[in-house]
Image (cartoon, rainbow, N blue to C red; front, side):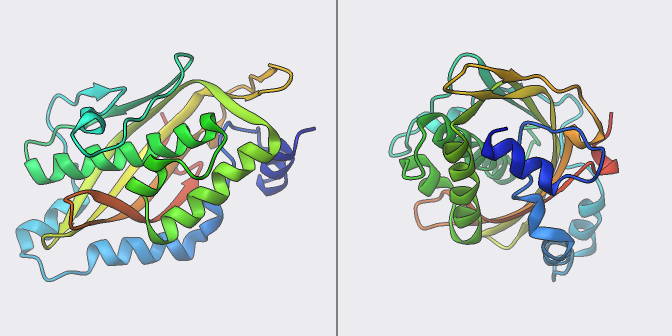
Length: 234
């Protein structure tokens, strides 16, 4: 059994089926989730802004984008994923330019982590470009698990039900779900794909915090997740 699969099974509850992503980010615990949630909810915004926290900040007809276009903007590193691995991001257009920018960079944060996995390196330009602070250190550890296990992944991961909360001009909180039921661990050495059937734990709820840096990039600086969250179940 490879190191990555062993780690994931050791962290999974008894009887749980292994999903493609290790539970490193989920290991940040409910304390981290609560901290991010309270940060998003506790603010001096007007009542109308506060009401939006509980509602979906998405357009009536959500769009899906496998590759956010901001990655090709001048000065930003290009992110490339292999043809047999795809991240699909729904709900990327809210009608609010700032929220759309936050969502685009949050998606690029996810892509930068996966690019590092496929590159087999924690020193990729995009990883440090879109992630900072605790999120960067957690992402490096996460990617290293794949490298140590000589693993990558194949298939499609869907990210959906995005909700954005803005705090002033340079802080934002994003919650969203992921559907990993169609993505699978692949061992680079043997080429074997671990096609475990989908379970409740194939769906993950994420809470993320972002800050806008001097170059106008919304960097993810903190993240927590809950695998098997009821909010994300089909």
